[in-house]
Image (tube, rainbow, N blue to C red; front, top):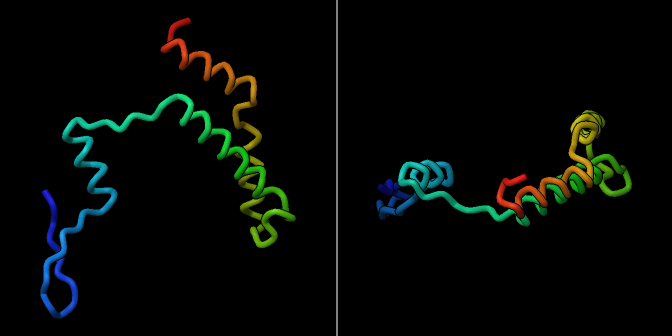
Length: 97
């Protein structure tokens, strides 16, 4: 399951499993990490705040213009507050209408 990677000249083995390997192994084993609806919504709100911050030169003075343009294009299609509220209600009801 774990790969042994030798480090340095000592030849001592170190058990190492990269994040990607861990992800695929847990999926293969049927282990699904749960994300709660409030965690998912918080991530969406934080992502929107991050994108807005990228647009503001006072908050992020060294961000290249192309990154600012990209953030603007993404925000143009980003869910609005009322849409996120609808999602929250949908998830709280367990997907029922």
